[in-house]
Length: 279
Length: 279
Image (cartoon, rainbow over all chains, first blue to last red; front, top):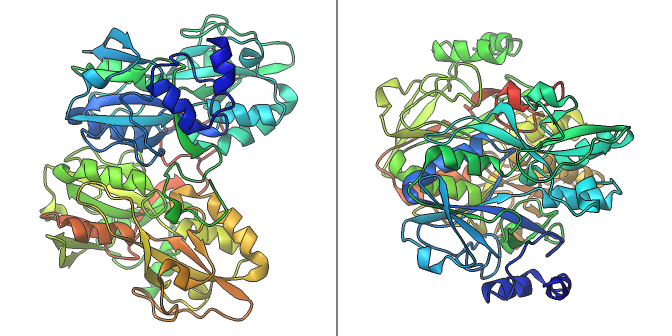
């Protein structure tokens, strides 16, 4: 698998998705399609779609909506060329009534005519920008998963969707705090500026060494813990809403889109993009 | 009315909305609540809401969605303190089956239990930023309405919503083009970067002196015509979709929100905003 991973790193987004579609690759996508937007996935029956979309609009930092399918149509036409959401994500979680029931590599047999697929921006985009700026990110350097916490910041509810905001933590050298905030603010479609800088207790985190998801990461001397809204938030809201069925990506196993990390919209439609400016 | 207008310019957003709610003021809102986001309005029956929201997501430049009500609830809680969308806009247009039928100052008697209200960002926000940067804007200096054109750029359709993108034109001094593009790009919730710079014919505009809406504005020597996606686009899409009823603001008569022009989201929820950074 490691050899294949290193080979995939050299391929285009279309070629990587072809490997994933053929079930030749079913592992995490960190580092793949590096200059392109990757996305969290949530698929819901249409009866829940309007409220979920309102939930995303009202909570743009944890739930930055980058693409929505037509009802029953598995093709995400605005996010790339020939994306079939039933096959083009390496691994999926199937939830029934808010409880995880299956983990699969293909959801063709699960697809329903009333499904609406939602793609939400993820933190890979701003992490790549931070890396390019020479900011050390401990969990990347140490090949662990970013620590994630349940905060006491409440999301703005919409219909049955509600719950606490989940945040991810990266300890940033004090001298680089302003730069990190400014860089991440440039990516509103990838969680944007932090939701909190400093004391974890101020947002309800009792012990910053004990994340609720991911791996612990130290807050070294001379660094400050910085908290960003996290893409696990909508999964918590879905657990609260308990739809009869919901399909998400398996964490870390994202949809790789054809949208450039620095595009000024997440819509793939050359005619609406100024010549030479983006994508 | 002029005296009242100059008096309103000194008032807070809440105070201006109170005057509008009392039907003491029913004219345009340009220049009012100056440091706050103003919004275009579209109210539709819930049966059309999911497709309209998909249309906005797919066309973020003409249709930057800044707020959505719950179904049947006229309060726009994420956009301000105590906003009642039935009374707090100076003037409304009522469309039936895609055709304008009435112009009114209050829609309390039109409100339906299945209505969903959508607020979309407008160009006032980036125009204020251009003014602060000392960029001359002809239609503002000459107190006319910005010229708007039907372009041949097609929107990305969603359900019954489709049609050509409407664009607004501002002629910018050549030396300031880069600065203008950079400034407007900072406001994705107010149409963002231009969709076209230069030759009007390249986006299907035969005569830049003859706008489809608004007033003509000259392209003076040493300036270049710059075209932004325009908030009239969703009204054209609604005309195509022909819902049994739809209510919009009367052009220029916008919803004044409590969201700062420079806020990093359009959601009024102090707990999700980093201390001291925004709003």
